Length: 389
Ligand SMILES: Cc1cc2nc3c(=O)[nH]c(=O)nc-3n(C[C@H](O)[C@H](O)[C@H](O)COP(=O)(O)OP(=O)(O)OC[C@H]3O[C@@H](n4cnc5c(N)ncnc54)[C@H](O)[C@@H]3O)c2cc1C
Image 1 (cartoon, protein in one colour):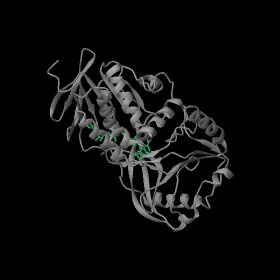
Image 2 (cartoon, protein in one colour):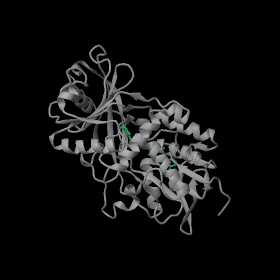
Image 3 (cartoon, helix red, strand yellow):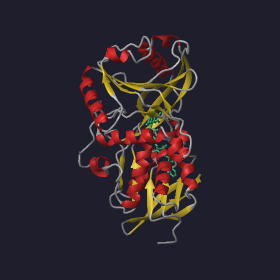
Image 4 (cartoon, protein in one colour):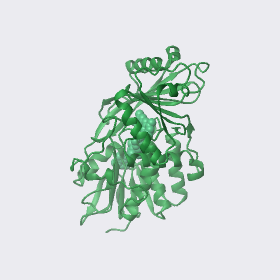
């Protein structure tokens, strides 16, 4: 092999790439190079609502969410950088058919150490803002310690901590191919020429698809545009708000700074390159209506813009975290299906372990293996194939 540029090359500077770089350094691997074609967090990460909740329907994701919350809510102590965590409490609202799965998921979370409770509507009303309308809701999962963080701060925090440990980050360099020889990865081809390494971690978000295809290891990925509507509410009426997911309604909301509330709503198939990055007027109207239905004071709320971002979705709305079959030394983390931010500390650690030790030891990622689609062994979600997973 030609002279090595680094021991490990990480492709993509979203939250997953930066977290992986940090955990590689934690494992003593600091001769590393992260390549980002644009700027850190310029993909889905910079468009995230960055909600942290741990209510999930399966063990591996619940474990990752609990670990993600532990790290992100203590980011300053853990990583030495601000992460912008705000504890708001979280309520997951479920319909009659979703009530039993909700109770099962709460029991799963509790068995893994999560502070969560399944509530009847009357008990939840004691905790929700005055006048909250629980029409059509049969059960509520509450997580008092959950909230949201700042996806840019977390991404840059991981990057800064990794740099301090010796890692290198290059911006404005695009990876155009994966170099292989004798069944193993030897580096990457880039817009700056070839760069050599004995391991490569592929975390290029929606753009991982072609690179995986080029080494004969396709993952079924599709792309969905998701809108984040920014509303302004009366602070007199609602000085604070919890973070809420309305599963029957298919949307979530959380407070932001000042009087701003973010409503994350609507998923439409989209073209990766040309999708509309702003918010549709009719979706903003829909957000105002669903909010006013639950919290009547939102009848007087105003629409103040927002943005759209891309979900990179797998058939079971869960990511692939694995070594790439047939290419020794190539590891990938793709298909976060709109809920990856909170999982990023656990994913970065697992990708670092897969790279260095060949298997993920902190959390067993076998359920998220590469081959599960071909084996027809998909992850099941209580709430169907949606972001609530
Ligand atoms: C609107 C929206 C709301 C969301 N809300 C939440 C939420 O509330 N909670 C939650 O947990 N998750 C949420 N998510 C999901 C979460 O943001 C993503 O799962 C996560 O950010 C994915 O990170 P990533 O690093 O895999 O991808 P990305 O952030 O897309 O990073 C990939 C990076 O790779 C770079 N790249 C691509 N190709 C190349 C190449 N060939 N060479 C070099 N660089 C390359 C890109 O420029 C990009 O910076 C949301 C997502 C969106 C879009």
